[in-house]
Image (cartoon, rainbow, N blue to C red; front, side, top):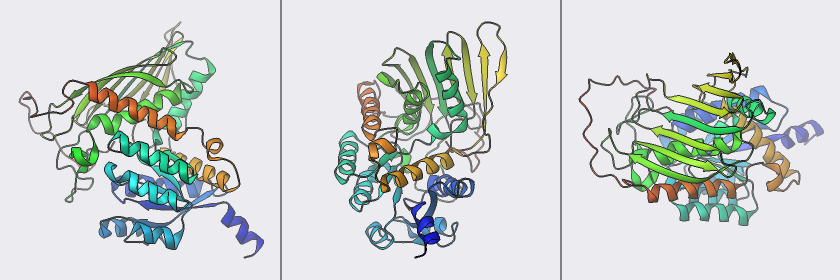
Length: 385
């Protein structure tokens, strides 16, 4: 190996994907490829192998990245390809064994939220990564959306004065037979055994994480939840309202739902302070873009807040995690290479599950009768969060 080849290898982060569903295929992979194009000199990510219990799903993802191998078994992938990092995008109840295997093989772990379908599984996942001494994180891609980084910067600058509240609406339409592309699909998110919960456990983790990120580490420490089982005939909640408070006293309100048609306005973030209001629309979710506005409290003027509208949050996530992996490989302790400790994410997961356990209607029976409506138009993008 010559010096140029060695230098290229040193700054390359070799990725594997375990779980080749629509999020991995349609969002994480494009984000990885975008990160490699945008920042080729910064721990350039490269996908080397993928695996899934469904070999067709693995092949469908692999063909989108030249040179990537689809491997039937995770153990074989880890042994043959020795990736630097593994993105875990399986159904929730399988996160723990996949993350444990990756960590035991010495790979960094980027695990989709929630950490697991239950608290014991999440605790065991975290403990396994700690024992292995590997870098591990939850895949909270919303931390890396350029719009949310712009919001964080305004808050940190004092531009809002004293922040008093954060309000988040993050909703979508997810019927029982939802499919990302119209083809038959196993919608495991509607299965309580595999998902652990519905809209609350799927969508609220992003909001809880984002509150602490936007407020510079002032995390939610108290939380109450009201699950809803109103529209869809499955045995998980199809909506929820959550109210909380951060350690610093900021009030937090989250509305999450699987029962909001996608044609309606359904993604909104507000940060309220004594000097102004930040409003972000259509920034929550997997896609780039959206808009951010700052309203001045004194004059009532509303001005746009600039940010990179073309950058995917997944690209930013892959870039920064790849750089952290490279730093750990160079000798930096994992706790210094990544600013969000996995124990912190576990605490938020615990807080959410406790709120769900205390809530009335946490285990729904038959959905309440809804008012009569006409048919709701269905498109292949329905359910994309």
